[in-house]
Amino acid sequence: MAKSTGFGKTSTKVQKIIRTALSFLLLLFVLSACKSKVPVQRTAYVDAYLRDSIPYSLALQEEPSDRLLIFLAPALDTVQFEETGLYQKIFAAGYNILCIYQPPAYGSFYYSRKAMEFKGQQIQNAQNLISHLRKRKQIPKAEHTVLMGIDQGAYMNPLLMANNHIDTAIYINANPFSMYMSLQRIADGRMEWNEKRQDFMKRKFGIDSFPTFKQRVAEVESTGSENYSLGSFSNMYWMSYHANYMLDEYRQTPGHNYWVFFKDYPLFKNSDLEYLKLLDKTRNEGSGNYNVLDNYQGFSPENWEALEAAILPYFVKEQS
Image (cartoon, rainbow, N blue to C red):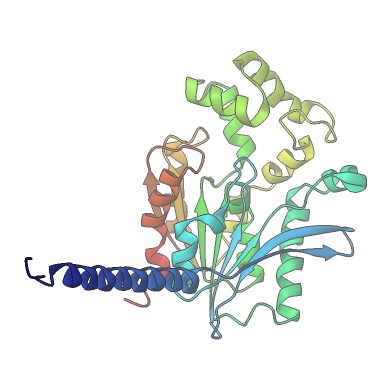
């Protein structure tokens, strides 16, 4: 009978060691994932005046932080900022993060809620929420605050920036005028009615022909403010942002302003960027910077990756 070489026993020991090592590595991975998960609280603030709620999410650092990001959501795009890598990395850089969303319009308060969808009221909603959270000390005092808005949210930046002593604002897919002016440019032929813009108008407003689009844009000013000529927002909504151009507020707001555009975003016009560069040179206080990205896809994961590369340096440069 042949003698046992001990190879089988050795092989079994090696397999046990490998399994133990793999189990340990898996445990480390799970613990790391749990540790890095951002503690996001999603809730709503019930405003006594509105008789309705303002949805928001809040992520707070375990240790007190003097850094805060306030995010203002868009109107024409739906985003889940909390699910992005950019959100996680900004939090990892030591920032508390407050995301403010638009109050829902449904149920018994649908009509009263829709009637309050205009620029002044939406800015007041955001201010009420910020003041409420500060009063209850749910937002720690921040020496450095960044305000970041996408389309509609960006048009709210200057007034909120001035009222809350914010030193930096980030504007994504906005211009110094209004969203309605961008729609007017297309309707008037100053921007080409191409396939991408047609697809955009169909998704956002249910309009798939240029004659219909041109008519609806004209109706915003020619019919009653309570009418809905463009999508789910009233004519008053569009005109409230258009009647007081953001540039009038922007010129008087101190602080640093960073503009990010997608050059193929259907409402982008290069002359707006050139105008901003000239406008920033005339401001007594504050400064401006600009970045133009490619391949707008309605804030797809690829778009968020591009935004991360463009925006994240504003949050981590102090630590480098």
